[in-house]
Amino acid sequence: MDIRERINGIFPAEEEIPAECRLDGAVELREYLVNGELRPWEGALQEVRSPVCVRTRTSVERKLIGGFPLLTEKEALAALDAAVCAYDSGRGLWSTMSVACRIDRVREFASRMEGERDRVVELLMWEIGKSRRDAEKEFDRTVDYIADTIDALKDLDRVSSRFVIAQGIIGQVRRAPLGMVLSMGPYNYPLNETFTTLIPALIMGNTTVVKPPRHGVLLFQPLLEAFRDSFPPGVVNFVFGEGRKIGPPLMASGKVDALAFIGTSKAANALQKAHPRPHRLRLALGLEAKNPAVILPDADLELAVAECLAGSLSFNGQRCTAIKIVFVHESIAAPFLHLFGEAIEKLPCGMPWEQNVAITPLPEPDKPSYLTELIADAERHGARVTNEWGGLANATFFYPAAVYPVDERMRLYREEQFGPVIPVVPFGDIAAPVDYIVSSDYGQQVSIFGRDSAHIASLVDHLVNQVCRVNINSQCQRGPDIFPFTGRKDSAVGTLSVSDALRAFSIRTLAAAKETKANKELIRTIIRDRKSNFLSTDFIL
Ligand code: G3H
Image (tube, rainbow, N blue to C red; front, side, top):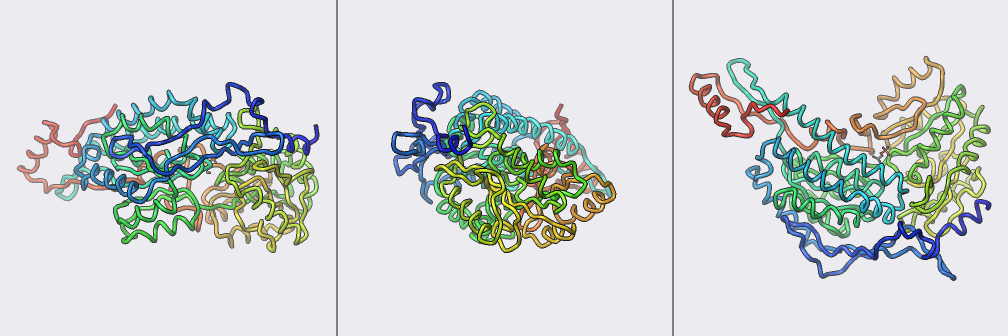
């Protein structure tokens, strides 16, 4: 079957969906988590349609898979108040609890979460069209992240479980929570990226309100009871609805102490501006990126093709770390495009449950038409799609397109496409891709491909000062999660990694006293009688 036929018939009829992959009825989420209660919601629901379409005799239609509450400002503010009360100006049970006890609660949550793996994976597949393999990876990586976070916190706490005496002052320095954290993740990693801010924020003693992304809400349903049962009331609250309606009033209250947001800089700016005292607001933002690959004339072409393919098309190019533009030296542009086209052709296209599937339907309803427009714009300026059937769309499915030669007149040159279109730019002089990086609004990562050690070294030395990760003969990516993940310019605010995130959601604070006999005795008594969780020399094993 040729590619066109495959794409035209890509969606299954209802009865062709394998029985074990069907959702057991529509998932109607009719509750939200506030103050330790799953509150019922009788109001309007947002209908959830899967990127997976179902073929009928006359059409293909996005399958209706459920709905979630369209909460209003009132419910969102009630969730915020619950979190603020639970923090209780720093006196709350959670924020004054010992680190060891907080770790136990998070552990309990993680073990309950593991029991929901199959259901969450299934919902990831149906809600955002992620392949089963990638959905399982997202889930497992998140569970590992929680375990690693616990280990990192133990390390941090061990260092703090001692006193320092300097210039006649005794002090104990620890990291303390910031207060109320609003956590908003993105649709491409709705579970993982939400949890990479939520879990560190929680374990450091903050209280939280979570607002899941527009696509990727239902998958939180199986976890709500575990959140309710594992943490004291008000420590974790979940609200659902339109970000535009719920986010700004939360921020305008002035009660959000830290904002963890992964999405566009436009939305991040709007949220930040709504805060009456922005200087009080701690930010952890993951924003846009347009990571380039630069393929030098001496590159191992097969390796460059394989890495650029994975880098640009994993999860259909919907990763903030995806390679979103490829600069290839003009002397090897033709063989590169040839091999790249062949490699695209080998990518299995299909539904998320199909074994080894690589290219799947897209969750954003307007994405296929947006990508089609980008290609048309490039074609108007003289580029063309170089792989057979590239850009062919069928409802939510979009077949990957390599577009060449792209230049600065085309939207694809600067716009973050966040989808399966790969602009390829020929260059003669390395100054061209370097200038592109320097003049870009983004500064997350770059991939360079080549073998000349002196050339690679000089590019590394320059580009580490332009972006936050230079990948050598390797695709761009976030992991392993112990590595710092951040960006310059409009790409990020703050650094996340297992250990950096603990710092991002806490502040150093200390208790100190002049080294007098009376003070020493007082501190000794507090420690001996275990009267304080802060002034303590307990060592977590
Ligand atoms: O979308 C951004 C993700 O954090 C990327 O993570 O590079 O491991 O896929 P990844």
